[in-house]
Length: 551
Ligand SMILES: [Zn+2]
Image (cartoon, rainbow, N blue to C red; front, side, top):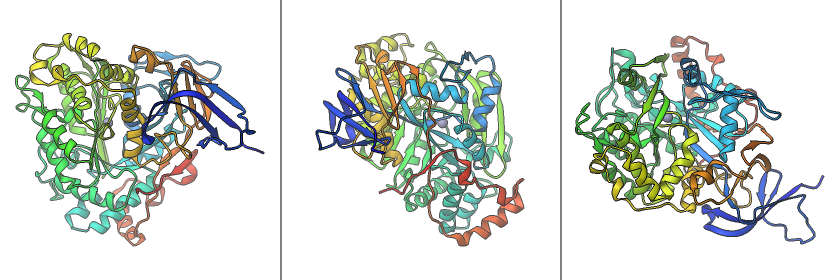
C-alpha cells in the first residue's frame, strides 16, 4: 500500500531547531513522521490541513511533572474534595480533574493544550511496574519517567567503597530493569537521613550521611559522572538539597559546581533560589541573579523553573523531609512513605496566595529565572506539576513572559516588598513566539536527548500543534486549533477526536553483567520481593521506544 500523505499547508512555522522563525511553509507527513516535500509534483496529499494564518509548532514537551506512580495515586486518594468530575464523551472516558487529575483525564488535558510528550520526574524503582500500568491508561502522550536513585543504598555503598565501575553498572542495570529514562537525584542523602532519624535531613553538600559515610556532594559528583559516561540521553536530573529553605541558593550553586562541567539538569530551580536566614520570613529574598549568572556562563547546566501560580494545589515529592516540613507549615493532611532501600515521599495539600510575601516572592523568583537566563535553550517551562501549580497554567505563564504589562499588573497585586527583594519589577524582557517554542518543545527535546522530537525536520515524529494567533497569548495557547500526534489529528478546537495511546520512552544502556551477582546478593538479603520479580519485562509495556545514547 502506498503511504498516506498529509500536508499542513501554508502555516506560519516556528521550528527553532532549524532556525525557522515564523516563515510560511508547507509540512508533509507520512507514516507518523515528518517527511521532505515530495519532489514529484504528481504526488498529491490524501489530506490537507489548511494552516493559512495559523501558527505551527512542534508538540509541547513537559520534561518535569508528576502524573504516574504511587505518590500520585496517594495524592488522588488524599484529597477527594479536590476532584471535579470529567464526564465521558463519545470519544473519551470519564475521570476526575483538580490538581491531580486521573490518568485518562491527564492525557486528554495535556493533549488539549498542545502537549504530546511528558515525563514523570520521580518513580521509585520498586514501583516502576505501577508507573507503567498508569502510563498504559494515559492517552495522547508519549511518556517516560526518571528513576529515583539519590538515596539508594547500593548507590551510596558503591560510592563509599570507591567502586565507580560498579556504580556505573548498577545505574545502567537499574534503568534497564525499570524501563526508566534517566537517573533522578532527590535531596541526595537527605531522604536516607529522614529514614534513619526523627526529622532527619542533610543541610549542606558536605554533611555525611550516617551509616554510609558519603556526602551529597559525592553522590551528585559520582552519579553525574557515571551517567555522563553511560552517554544517557538525559544524564542526570537533580532536585537539590534544602528545597524551600531560605538561604538555600548557596547549596544550589554548590550543586552546579559539583557537576564539574558535566551535563546536568537542575529541576524546579525556583524552589532552590532563596536568600535569607533559615526559617526567617523577614529576610527571605531572591538570589536568582547570582545563580543565573552561573548558568549563563556554564552551558553544561540546564534548568526547569517550577513556576508557582496563585491558588490551591497538592505538593508531592520524593523528598520525605520536605513533605513533612510543608505539612507543618500548612497544618493540613499529610501522607509519607518510605520505599525499602530506595526512596521516600511526602504528599500534602498546599495553597499559594498573592497576599503572602513568601508566596508572591516565589512567583516572582520563577519569572526572574525565565527572564534572566540569556539562552532560552538552557531554561524549560515547568510548574513541577502539581507542586507549583497545574500544567493547565502553562498558557498563563506564556502570557506572563510575552506581555510585560500583564506581568506588571499581576505584580501590583502582590506585596510591595516583592519589588525590593527581587529584580522582577526591573525586567523589561518579553519572550518571542520562537523563544516560547524553545522553552516548551525544542529545548526540552534537546536536553532530553530526543532526536525525533521538538523539531519539524524530516524524520521527526509528526507531533504538531497549530494555534490561532491572538493578542492575548493565554487565550492563544489555551485552545490550540489542531493537535497532531504521530501524524493523526487527536484534538480539534479543544475537543478530543482520536485519543490514541502514545509510546513509553526508555533507555537500555549496556552494562558490565559481571556486577549482577553482587547486586543479586544484596537484593535477596534486603528486599521484600525476590530478585527475579523485580525487573519490568519489555512485554509489560504497551508500546515502547528505546531512546539511544547521547551524541
Ligand atoms: Zn517534581
